[in-house]
Image (cartoon, rainbow, N blue to C red; front, side, top):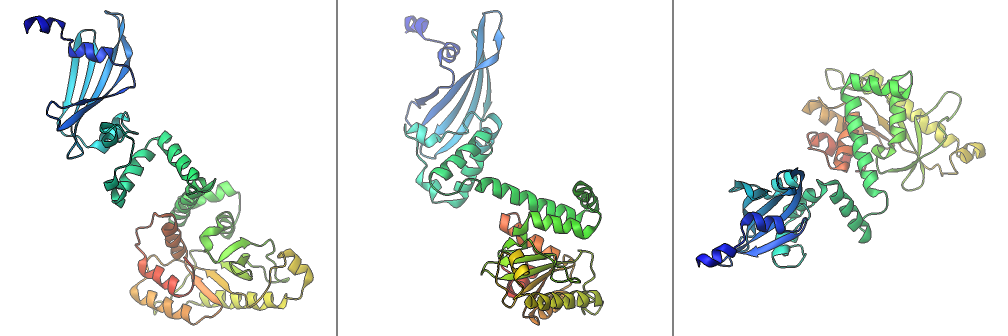
Amino acid sequence: MAILEKFRASEADIIKNKKDGVVYVADFPRGSGKYISIVEASANADLDVKISSKIQLRVTYLTEREKINGVEIAKVYGDKIEKIHFSTLDFERILQLLSLFSELDLTAISNKAIVLDESIIADSDEVLRFLKLIASDPEGKDKISEIAKNYGLIRPGDIDNAIQKKEAVELFDAILNSEEKFSEYKRGLEVRKDEEVWQRFFSENSWILGSDFVDILDERRLDVENITDYLLKSFDGFVDIVELKLPSAPFWTTESVPRSELTSATMQCSRYILQTERRINDLKFNKKIQNTPIVKPRITLIYSRSHNWSEGEKEAYRVLNSSYTTLNIITYDHLLERSKRLVGISKHEEIDSVEDIKSDGIPF
């Protein structure tokens, strides 16, 4: 036995002789689990022995429980070996910190097959955790995108569009709730009036206005005196109108009655509808709106804010909006909450107001 010990390789020698980047799997003596390890050359050389030191990461993987029971990091300098042991360390955290196992399914490796365990597929939370884990690595994001495209789950540009929409909502939130951010954005646009800021923002992010609208038409002027903020082509192919007022516009009196400014805005909307209908047979005008049919146009008035409304004011809003047939009044906060929900970042703080929007026919 003593003779055999002379020929037994040390652990340091074993690590030094392992190939970089290769995953090694070894069974427990009793078969209850496996040691899974990977070795990489260290960036620093050991000048005394003229060879590069090596670092090994080894996880103790319990097959039956399908979980990591321990983690060991070993570094070899010549014949010397230094070790750090972690008795319990979260698997996901290990992947994030070390990234060495970020693309490995340990169950699959121990069985010599790359598969996604059925128990993960059946658990939506596990799937979400798995995808977040991969997406935490830039290369992982590219792989998710590639797989989604190959299986027809997304079209080219979908991921970029989703990112752009999320950034637009974050900008919307910032310029609506921060005077400093609004002023900075206004300077960047090089416009003079606050109204122009919101016109430009919604022109560039028309999807926020709602799924009712599929295209912003080129023409805005209805006649010499009446110029709308937007003439739009609705999803059913007809002309509709969107009118913008500032978020600072007053909405209610202390008795939860519409302010005179709001009444004036609704009357202006009624004039726009009337003037639009009068242009039905105007060939020049119809050419400018790409011959989009004019049939009973509807108008959406984006007006004021609602984040601090009382229950009485929310109720009054519902009653007010239900009294109109061709006009929908929506606040900037309603628009923001809806757009947050569309991109998946909403916490539903304004759910009562949002339900009011839905009930009054403004689409989600």
